[in-house]
Image (cartoon, rainbow, N blue to C red; front, side):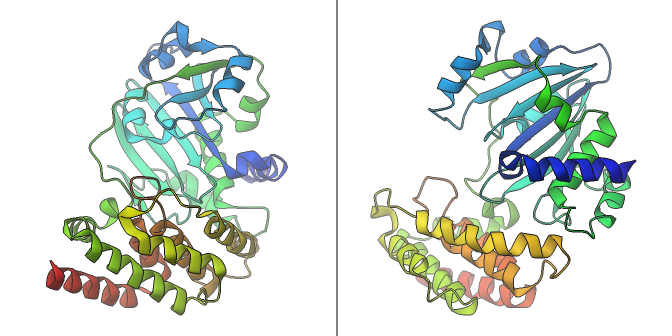
Length: 351
């Protein structure tokens, strides 16, 4: 049965490309009294006035604002489901905690940049968060709580039709009885627009501050020219070591990094295109079992993501210092340890 569910989820991702590229799907299961759509809307900070027409939702979608909920809310039996197209509110720890009051919550989230995760929360606590790029990267108070259901799905990914995203969707369906396909075909969904978001926890502006707070802090304490120099050295190392130095997009990205905090918005689209080009070659080969995640192509993909992040406009997403996070995935552990230590030593000398 689980294999059938997994195959159905992979077929869904194949036939609905927008779902494969960007999705936030949240299933809320009440653990006591029944919950209704309006209860979930209220927990998100909205009210009955937050329910809008499909036409209003389409118009609101043309003016995207990160700090809001824009999607649909629907009741599936006793469960309440949230669906966001190109949104992520349901994946935020603050939202998971609020929604999981007297409830269990599962969320599957990913976006076009490759970021994503599977989350599970209950009784106001985030239990498990598993990265969509690497199922071994986990957090939460009980990070292995999903393994009994997830591991068989991971073991059954040998064919090209099986992916980690499909495994995440299948896991939610197995644990909740709610299928994404049924949610997408429902005609009972309420379109909801909540312009304010659940108050955010204090957190670093990027990924690096979460996975390596010491390196993040030292980089932010450094004078801007020193920090920019560290980014430039990293970009040059990534380009040289992962066969990217010949790419025009990399040359353009390096020029943007060199401008530092004085730069205006700048157009980094060419680097995005390069990342997507590598990703389109890498993902099918991994799914088909031709290569593993440690293959040089995967490391090149992470190197390209690092260069793309380095060239991001300061104060935007991704945070430029996330280049160091992606570099940590591109290099072997021993090589990354050397680069990290050298970076810290250089920052200390130049402060």
